[in-house]
Image (cartoon, rainbow, N blue to C red; front, side, top):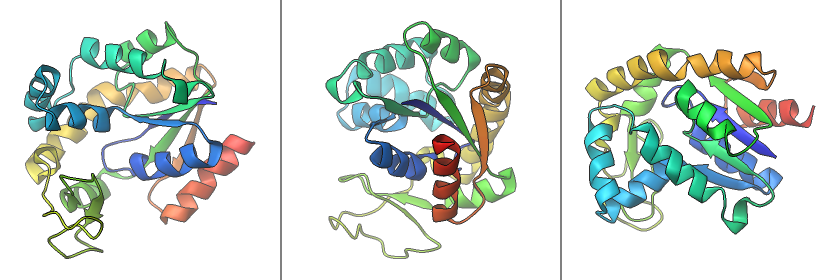
Length: 206
């Protein structure tokens, strides 16, 4: 199975992607995680990407497309994969169609006013990558490895507003793109995490 998760920043794509990838035993490919790995390792790609991400902008197509094309050729993607964070534009979707077929695009829909609170309250661990939210976890250190948590620059409230604007302009058209191909189904992302997972599974199994 080859899947794409669509939805605005903060819709819970990462959380759901981990669950769905595990359930169907396919590779979870997060372009965000891939880019953050490059940034952590201070590679030239990481330095270039960080400048865009810190402004809430999208990393250029050529960089992301080459990364994804290389990643889906690895052994763990042989029996399927789930793309989380790619494609983000119709141009990227058309490029993706040039080297692989997609079975379904799952659109996780959440009202924008709920997203600002979700994203700006997020805290990350710099060492193990664990994610927390101030509404449910108030400690300053990671419960898994003890490292001090931090707020990503692209999770700050002023950047979030720009990220949602970019999503509306460039990523939202993907919903129509995959709907026209008969490959889209939408779930209510403004619900309990388990309820969202169950709705996605029901749609895929159907």
